[in-house]
Image (cartoon, rainbow, N blue to C red; front, side, top):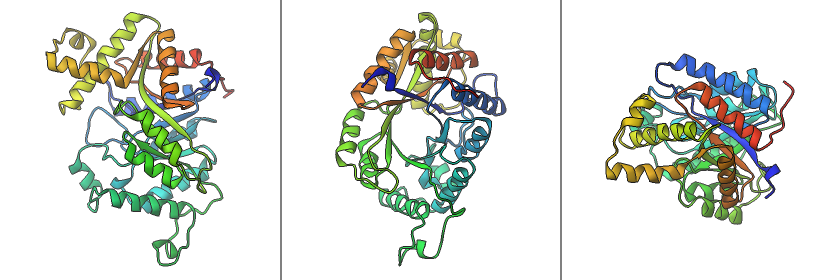
Length: 341
């Protein structure tokens, strides 16, 4: 795969940093999307999370609408909508409306995880059974709504998703395991593997997806990307600082402490136990951190391992300027084509 063909995209979880708040986090998302649009990133995805004070992105479809209005060319999408949390018809109508407003710029990325704890998922959708077969049924229903199916004997015979439009959002299946990858292959959807969630087995999952892919009305050829935490900095010292912050954050998540806001000084002085350090080293497989040359080399290797031409980069940092600088450096090292905005 030629280096020039590697596309870089953004996954924004709308993080709320120490001393900040949700309002400021969302304004930062607007500014980051505008910068990504200007610098030539391919797409900008937004996550769905619930019952946490450390992330502001509870409703990606609402934020997509705001960011699409503030940008001109970059694709906007969900990374993703956790489908079991919602009415399938409502998801279809939300994204049809977005596609009608911004034709050719909307991605609908679907996931099965709750985006939080199971209690919250149950409150969001009391009919959620957490059964894989029900998720598959939702996928089939979603396709029916987006394709204006009128199949006899199904709900689509009587219920349509509005507005009725000529185009459809791109459909992506998000996965951190092989199971949803096989579902994406069977349905004829694009696939994005969340290496930042589970850094094991991804290349094989993508190979299996490609081998079993069946063309659909939504996608004729297999398409895949890989998502990973990325921290690119001008100096090794700053890169190490960003990595140390993420080391601590991921370990805290594993302990169920989702709403901690430590400073770098607190993280730097924390003494890990042997068991904790083992988890830190394992979690480093979920991220790429370093100076531009280091990051470029590792990202190219990741793309080659997965045999993909697109990497979705998620970056969180204690300071907004470090987060923005990381994406600026990615645009430079991969020679993204700036857009006239």
